[in-house]
Amino acid sequence: MNKVLQTSLPFDAWPERDRSLWQAALRGGAIFEPDGAAAHWAEDTRRQVAKGYGKWLWALQSFGTLAPEVDPAKRVTEDHLRRYVAWLEAQGLASVSIASRVTDLMEAIRVMEPEADLSLLRRLVSTLQQRAQPSRNKAVRIKPPGEIWEACTDEMGRIAADPAPLSMEAASRYRDAFALGFLVWSPIRRRNLAALTLGESLRFEAGRWRVAFGAEATKDKSPLAFALPDEEDYQAALSDYLQRIRPRIMGADDLTRDALPQIRGPLWISTRGKAMTAHALYYAVTRASARLLGAPLNPHLLRDCAASAITTERPDYVLAAARILGHSQLSTTLAHYEQASMLEAGARLQEIVAEIQSRMEQEVPQTLAAPYDPFLLDPWEQD
Image (cartoon, rainbow, N blue to C red):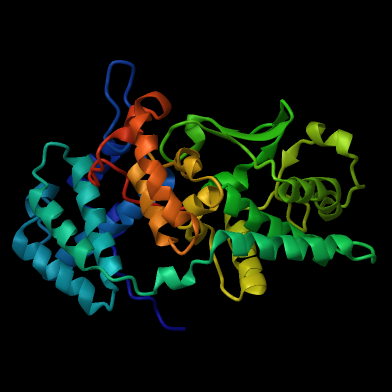
């Protein structure tokens, strides 16, 4: 077996000064002390930025210029940055990945030394992002949400109409198709998708199924709440999943419609009768889309056309799209929408944006109305 080439310095090998500053950045403050600059970051974000910063340290070490006694920000010189970018290019990284690695470095320095001058890094990040070209054409991979949902309903309809006893394999295919369809209409992040729990984060209230997550469960640390679609085909699929499919996977009897509001436990169940992990759901959705559409669509890629999924029939739902996507600013949602502009709603969306923005003060939190500033946002749009 070939040994994997190491290109990132592990945390326990960081200089003592760097480790101390990083730990302080992550630390929550005591009663009369402020939180560290990265205390609010999700675990995935912490891990990603730390790995990226370790890559920078490894590069400096390989150049013979690490200087453990020097503060992190003082190591960020134009010469070091030029050598670092060249080193990343020599590894064969795509331009998008290189831009991400330098953003890792900038974010690490920002939270470890909040008073540091980041102007050099910001200029470099801006330049790299402008030059970055995706290694794969995302626009080609995005499918119109209506097409995805139709494929899901066709699959679920075939399974539901089959007169043969419901097999575990058929139940699993129905579950995967419904999970894919769920993300078309409710494009929440993968960790929240996996955390959906009947009777807790997913409840039947006032005649509607409603999703609600507290601030501690979301990436941007803001509460998230919305109702599931009330379209007839969606509600039929959801009821069938809860009454027949989920019980079959769990090895239990079918449920009556009246029993649905009292169901408890994970929404997504594996064939072992346990809650599906976020990793398992990723592959379930990707596998289902490849089978039904001829193209593997992962949960994050579905978010790129999520605003269009919500606004195809009602462009004024763009505010709901922003909230469900977890975007702190409307401009971010519109950027996602533009990636899927092949949908017929695109032409109508622009007509209503002016009207929406005119009532932003009343309808949207101030953070949604604020001008876009990439340096004030968490740069990691991961599931």
